[in-house]
Length: 114
Length: 114
Image (tube, rainbow over all chains, first blue to last red; front, side, top):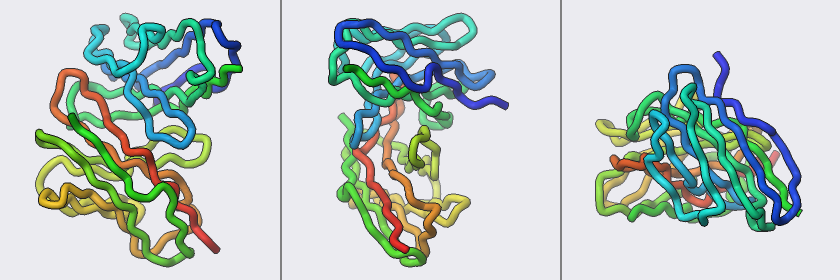
């Protein structure tokens, strides 16, 4: 079975541009979460979606938005990119909610803003 | 609010020597504790977890961690490390909450010396 897949794996954007990152969860998983990992730091929670409903939002500006589609895949959108948005963006999926359900992470999308 | 502190950003250790990676957490509610490993240029993989029951938990590749409630710690240990253990290790907590977020520490880079 395929794991969590993220696309693209790498991309370079210019300040002020917009970017869309995509995530396909493991088949059967209904929860998708997004994390930002800046170099040298641990991942920081951005969003969580369960059954297409936003369940949580981290401490990120409104330039960050996300959605989950009927097939449970998800997109993370970032507007007006800043140099500080350069990071590895990780998507995680799980079949349900709560700490008892294991979260599986994708390989991430490395975003570089120049 | 919950937080995780990993006391060492880097730990150099000789091959076949024992290692301990330290993790302390802060929470006013019951937590579930995890260690994740990130190999170079890869996503996160779950190494081991404490949900309930025995306070000593083990992974399939020889790591173990002990939940100590009185000291609010969840240190990771391995009696003999191998070059293949070179990676970044993240301690994390989850709580029963609507947003189901994972709170990570800043990570400890394990550097195996030949």
